[in-house]
Each structure stands twice: as C-alpha cells, then as structure tokens.
Length: 512
Ligand code: ME8
Image 1 (cartoon, protein in one colour):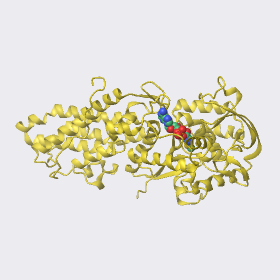
Image 2 (cartoon, protein in one colour):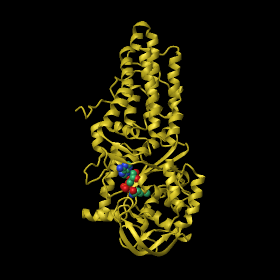
Image 3 (cartoon, protein in one colour):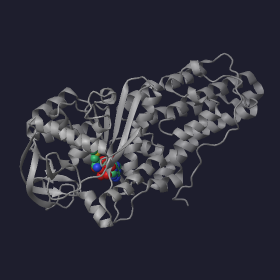
Image 4 (tube, protein in one colour):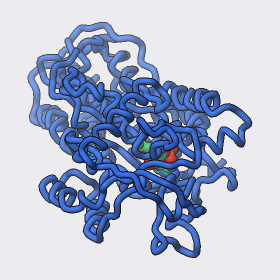
C-alpha cells in the first residue's frame, strides 16, 4: 500500500432514473485518470463513485416502470457498476444512498445540524422541480418553468429549513480565503455573485412523498434528497465516526468532480451544511462542461443518447478514453461526432504514438536480435530527447492538479512528436549499414523514450500503455512514476516479445 499524501476524489452519485450514458462516463473517467495518476505518483488514493437513489424523481421513475423503488434502484444501480467495469474505472468504493451505512450517516448529520440550531420547523410555499430536485423562487422562473427548462409544481407543506442565510458571509470569506476552491474561474465568479446576491433558508424536508430517509424523531418528513445525496461523500469515509482512520486520512476531500449543472449544490449548499455541522468543506470542486451529440442536446426523445458501450465496441476502450479527455479543453462544453473521433484516433494515436512505437519496436525486433539494444556513448540529440521525457512528470502533475487533461496530453504528445522527428533525423535504417553501434544507441534511446511515455500515458490508457510496456519487457513492479528515472531504465540484452500494433486506424465515416 502506498503511503504518500492522501488524495480523495469523488464523482457525483448518479440518479438511477436514467441509464448510464457518455456524460456520466465522462465525469467518472476524469476522476479515474486523476486517481490512477495519483496512485502511480505514490499517493494514497480513495476514489468514490455511486448512485443517488432517493427522492421524488426516482420514486416516479420506479412507479412508471411498475416496480418497487428498491428493486428499481437495484437494477439501475447495477448498470452504473457495469459501466465502471466496461470503462475500466478503478474506483475504490461504490456507494448507494439506500445502504444502511449511508442512512445512518444522513440521520447523524441531521441530528448534528439540529443540535447546533441550524435546522428549524416552518412551512414551505413555493415551486419545486422534480427533474432538478430543486426549489425555485417565483422570480427565478422563466415562462413558468425552471431556469433549466424543467417543469415546476407548486408545493405548500410543513417543512424543516436549514439556516442557509446565516452562511452567506462565512461562505464568501471561505471563497476568498480559498481561491482554488471552485474551478474553472468563470464558474467561481458565478457562484460568488450568486452568494453575494443573498441566500434564503433552504427547505430540507418534504411530507408529500415517501421514498427517502425519514427525519429522526419526525418520520412524516423525508429529508431533501440533496442533503441526503451530498452526505455520501462523508459516509464513504466513515462519518459519523469522525475519529476513524479513513475520516482522519481522507476528509476533507481533495476534489469533488461535478458537471456544471450541479455546481451550486456542491459549492454553496454542501460547504454550508458542513461548516454548520462543524466539519471542514472539501478542498476543491471542479465543474466540467456539457457534451452535445452532433450539435444537439442528448435526449431520450431525440434518440441520440450515446451509450459508452457502443463507442467502446466501435473504437476500443482506450481510444475512447483518450478522445474524451483530449478533444475538449476540460471545463468547456464539447460536441461529440464520429468524424472528430476518427480524426483524433487516426492522427494522435495511430499516426503519432502508435507509429512511433511500431516503427521502433519492429526495427529492434529485426535488427537487434529481438533484444533491448546496447547503447554506446550518448550524443547531444540523445540526451536532449531523454531530457524532454525527464521533464514531463512535473509538467503533467501540475496540469492534472488543475484538471487540465487536454493540456497534459498535449505536453506528452509534444514529446511524441519530438521522438518521431528524432527517428527521421537519425535515420536508423541508414545507420544499420553505415554504423550499426550508433543504430543500436539510437534505438535504445527511442525505446527508453517510449518506456517513459508509456508510463505517463497509463492513467489515460491503462490497457494500451500496459501493452506497450509489455513489449518493452518492463516488469510489472517497475511501472510507477518513481521508475521514470534512469535507475529503472531499460536493460540492454533483455529478450523482447514479438511487437504488435497497439492503435489501429479507422475508416473516416465521411469517406465510408
Ligand atoms: O445530478 N455532458 O445526478 P445525474 C457531461 N444525483 N456530463 C454529463 C452530461 C452531459 N451531457 N449528462 C450528465 C445528479 N452528465 C445528482 C448528483 S451528487 C451528490 C448528486 C454528468 O444522474 C455530469 O457530471 O443527473 C452531471 O453533473 C451528472 O452527470 C449528473 O448526473
């Protein structure tokens, strides 16, 4: 087990009213890459995902499906677990809000808030959107609908309230003292101005439906699904046992990754609930952008919902993982199209990375007796190329700590490009006749460069990178980032397996 600085990363827990699609896969993928990177970098990682199973929206979907809510949740939740396997996600835990550990945790935070005078009984009269599971004030409605376009209904019933208004100032102070708490910056500014404009107390219980966690001592009330759902992040590290090893190690979370649709819940309500309960807010919340499909919003009625499995079948898992994080600057909205996908895969993977690996490994197989070549003295061009791979780790680390996945990949691909130019300049196929020892040196430098590149691409493309490392004869226990250095360099004379292509080319759909 790793002993480095703890890193706790979470995905949103997904509603079980919907089948998993490419949007859900995207969020969890981003977390998976960070979790894998941090583990390889020697940190002690806890990576959490799961499903959000209570509330009116799920109750309604279960009714529409004609099944008991829990049975419905069991079924759909399993689809999210299956997706995690299909996408090769490395989550350490999968939480469901219907689990006893979570129900106990939600009731404990409620009691804590109640004891601290943060919750009081009143009555709510206002609008509610079941699709958003959110309350809206009259002034927020646009043409009789929620600002998100969702339908709203009028609700008038007894309700417990959380004193959110009391947390306006502390929240603003918290944002000011922690400028990296909300990212990207444009989203941070939106949240700060929302809080500055004033906060109302928040209704945190309902009496008109049953599918949820009952309020302790007043079971006619069901807790607001967002208070229930957000609490999952602390349940998973042992709350209410704040003295437990997990809680002390992993709370506050390093990063809550969310889509931009649910930033307010994570950056306003959640830190307020936590501070009110005497707990620390998370360190960072990143709100990424939204995927559309060929220019359109994904929707069941349009029939354009992209199932990640179809993409994996068509393009292979690691190319899909690569595309999603390379194509769109993380934080921006993105549009998915098969053309773009094919363009990226043929360009970056088949032509650039794949071809580099393929050229070098087949020359080694043919001209070096299938063994890692024996290098001679290194020339300036050799040390320059090796130096570039050596400088990559701190760059990639810094970019990933800012969730700049596309830039991290860009940095790695700059070195892929440099390595391809080095092949052309050194022309080992000519050296084979004129200067075989120099050819061996060049091929060694290239193989060692590929070793380092493949170590760094592991978080993004675990299987493809492993295949490359296998072909270089790198032992399984020499694949962490501590092995990027010369101490773990390839050993001359190691017999290598027969090289095999890693990234196939695809037919351009426009040309098909
Ligand atoms: O909001 N593009 O769950 P949810 C990018 N249960 N990301 C997308 C997307 C798209 N088109 N569609 C969905 C909930 N997502 C709550 C969360 S957390 C305590 C409770 C991703 O099933 C994105 O991460 O509606 C978004 O925030 C999330 O799915 C919403 O999932």
